Length: 466
Ligand code: HEC
Ligand code: HEC
Image (cartoon, rainbow, N blue to C red; front, side):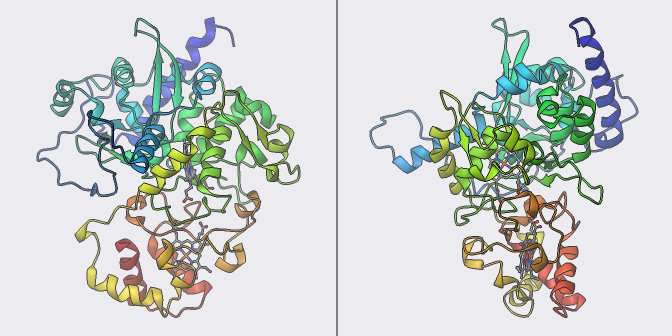
């Protein structure tokens, strides 16, 4: 694609976003029939909202300036990890910017389109004047220049813009962990608020964002697929989903035709969990390195001989993804701090009145007793038995598509705290169960538990209380 024609895809993208937005996301951001005519306004909150989500899981703010004499080394490591989790791109702008030219697509995105794609704005990065102008609907949210200003303020969660020295031109773009594993509390407006680190961003349409890049050949080439085919796959994911294994095995769709992608999980509440991911790929630092190097395309080193398996991972094996080296390595030295920060994030408590306490108490007894949930969801270790055992698909009564994409060939018992923070997108690794009621009904059948409707309801209230 020559330089001269590079306008067309951009323009097409713009139209598509406008259209998709009105069709799919318009409601969420206050759609009206006046698209494109009047400035977009974030719906105004009449009363300051009650803190919808409790801030207890966030560690205290970093120490103020002052005598650095007695900095607690653990605290310092955690703070360092928070900075990395929120702000580090590990040099991945070489991929997202220089190779995919994703910044060209982002330059044409209005804030309303960006919010529609599930990107979030960190209110604390905004100067007070801009905050109040936003609050009173005085900012033109249909203007892509506003998106660029937000990027310049480093206010778009998980996205880092690199600008020309004059500050006028967006030259490149990088992504951070927070893109998928943080959201905001919507305190100023939907999609604009204080950061909630570790929360799964189930609004984020990662696939649609990547598909907008002018050049997706870095994805297409190893897969031996056309760019169009890759874009089709990316757009099939939908909000809150991503496929970390596509680049290893090339399996975009399940045999039943559904997407091969998985849900973005929370990154909190993992302090007592040895094996991470739905199929238990490895420890938290193993996975952090995997995702940084193989998925974010960071400038870092990663090795796992299990990926050198042409039968299971034809693309990973052929492209040497089992042993990637970069010098300097911008990932490995950061892993201890990153882990310290993740382990400091405990799962947030559900708001008091978000579940029925009496039912939850009865549900708790069922969970430990008649329903036998605790035999796998061990309460004393974050409701998982992943430190001892993984489970075959047959045991839990589901298919083996995703477990066969992992060297473990098993599923991990999901830690259950903070379920209330990700009620969108469904449950189980691929969201196959729309509601917690569906999950309980599945177990009721699979294990012939003989739960009555009342008991199933109590169990659900207990799950909501975790
Ligand atoms: C593009 C979205 C995306 C980005 C960016 C991303 N992740 Fe993830 N992350 C996922 C998905 C999807 C999974 C689920 C994988 C699975 O279960 O098979 C996941 C899983 C995890 C898990 C395992 C959670 C659990 O319950 O065991 C951790 C920990 C994690 N990511 C940390 C990170 C860190 C640290 C970074 C930055 C280096 C990062 N992620 C960047 C999408 C993302
Ligand atoms: C044999 C072990 C086992 C038993 C018994 C068991 N679970 Fe699970 N549970 C799992 C596994 C494994 C997963 C992960 C499945 C997946 O991701 O596909 C899971 C996932 C879940 C999830 C989804 C969490 C999420 O974030 O998507 C919920 C909710 C859940 N279990 C609740 C229960 C309840 C309630 C019971 C008792 C009725 C129970 N489980 C009994 C192993 C078990």
